Image 1: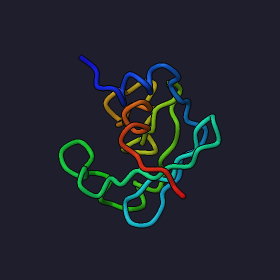
Image 2: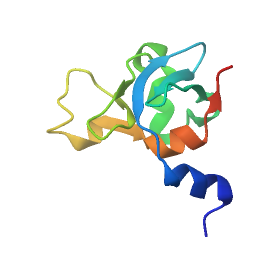
Image 3: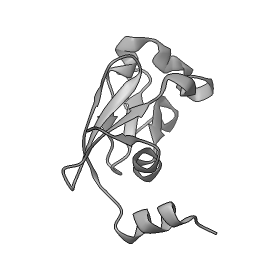
Image 4: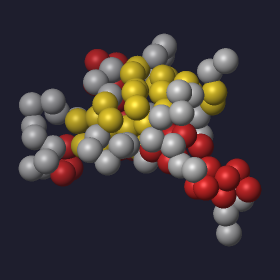
Length: 102
């Protein structure tokens, strides 16, 4: 069963238009409705995301072909040929767990 916040979001899901690394390990996000949001990844740099502790890798964030926030672990490897080179966060989850920038 979905909570009300999630139900409301999926009535009109957002598309990510821009992402860039912000201060520390935050992501600055712009969505298709012009809304700017921030997502803090500081506490998520464990497991698969631990490679992003190297800030130069964190800064290479981009929007993948599915509209999700993504990073290629090794920028010299073609992630379309080596699927395990890419890590990502679902655009819906990142919207619902980010905070509006006022």
